[in-house]
Image (cartoon, rainbow, N blue to C red):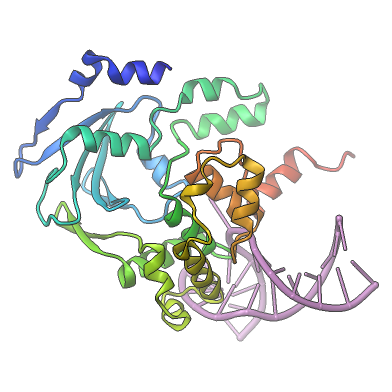
Amino acid sequence: LEHSLEIRNPNFVAFLVIVFGEQNMMRFAEIPAPDFDLEKTLSSGQVFHWEKADAGFVGVIGDHAIYVEQQGELLRASVASASSRCFGNHGHDAHATMQLVRNYFALDHPLAEICASLPDDPMMQAASESCRGLRIMRQPKWECLATFICSSMKQVAHIRQISGALRERFGTRLQVRGQDVRTFPPADCLAAATEKELRKCALGYRAGNLLKTAQLVSSGAGDLESWIPLPDNELCARLCSLPGVGAKVANCVMLFAYERLRAFPIDVWIERVLRQHYFAPRV
DNA sequence: CTCCAGGTTCCGG
DNA sequence: CCGGAACATGGA
């Protein structure tokens, strides 16, 4: 409620000024970003394709090449759309850019409230302190699903490598700030590939899973968008029915793409921490 | 050169 | 239902 009132408030909208940059007359959207740490969020292992550039990062949100940097409690972002090889917000007004970025980073989530609701447990307090400003994002569903299918038994550096290879081989090239970035290939694109082609992207045995899931998703047999209304347990079951998707990946997708904030992905590291700090055998 | 990494699936007790 | 093993690839 607070959020919707805020957006409709003319004063708030007026605050989202478009400024003209000193160089290249580049236009930026400015987005208020309280309780947010861009660097921490982008390197937290939710997404794997953003690269440092200048004072910020370049990457892709959906079909849009984005440059974004943080200055205190403000985000400055510029967009280059698919058809544009130019700098700045070509084809995008600042309001659309603002909404795109604000939605992607879930800046509307009441993070302060969420943190305040954490249990008064020394371990949790220490964790929330060290993760201050880290937000759970809203990622495109297919991209998130495909990336986490590729994540099994891989280090984060490898996942980044795989994401990059898939984008390089199958994605659409865009430019922002003079840098090349690439969209994540849609399901029908990967569904049309062969397993051998996918293996060239360092996927290993995951190639078969990714291909089969891409085919299910693009054929409509696994319609990711139509699963939005499902309750958590049913959504989880649908996701787990896809090849290469088990409990951990399903929870990642629910948390990072379906905004199911109750989802709790347990990887080997989380399991170790839980065992050590919460379920350690009593002496 | 060996070890292991943000799991999933299949198989045998 | 539960523990084990196979599965590819690359960096430490």
